[in-house]
Amino acid sequence: MELRWQVVDGPVEHRDRCDVSAVRRALWARFVSASHEGVTRVVVADDDETMRRAMVDVLEAHGGFRVVAECVSGVGLPELVAETDAQLVVLDVRMPSGGPSAARTLRDRPPHPVVVAVSASDDVPTVAAMVRAGATGFLAKGDLGATFAEDLVRCMRGQVMIAVAQGAQVLRAVREGHEPFG
Image (tube, helix red, strand yellow):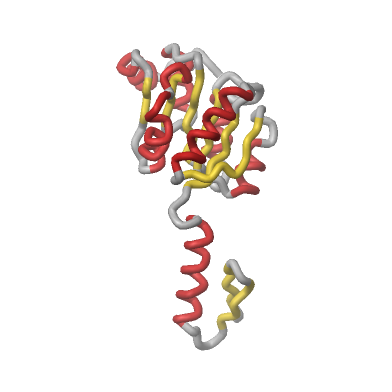
């Protein structure tokens, strides 16, 4: 039986004996390539060009992010995320084909990126629907400010961010399971 290891620089054959150092080098090369030296690969999905540009500019200036793609609709977003191997998607809730359905699809398909929703609509039903759909964070567009990039870093570390004034109500709505939106 022959096993193959697929790595960044081509296949490595593994037969009776395995060159452990070659495998280690191959795995390390894959890890370094995937992590891009600690930089998070991001897709910014927002149909408002001014807002999208502003978010991209902030992320690129931060240094911890590399915007690998931008889009104005959720159509084809899962394929774009898979193609770019994005680790994070900043998702506008109200853009065409965005919202909870886009978040659910991204949650369920590889590479399973962290999804952070952004929206000018920060009412309880909207925020709760996004959290139920799998968003790790919800940031109100009017309050993104100077902490935007750091908020995304926190989400990438596994923290859940519900950065809206009525956060307690959102948690109650998520717990109760109402589906008023999306």
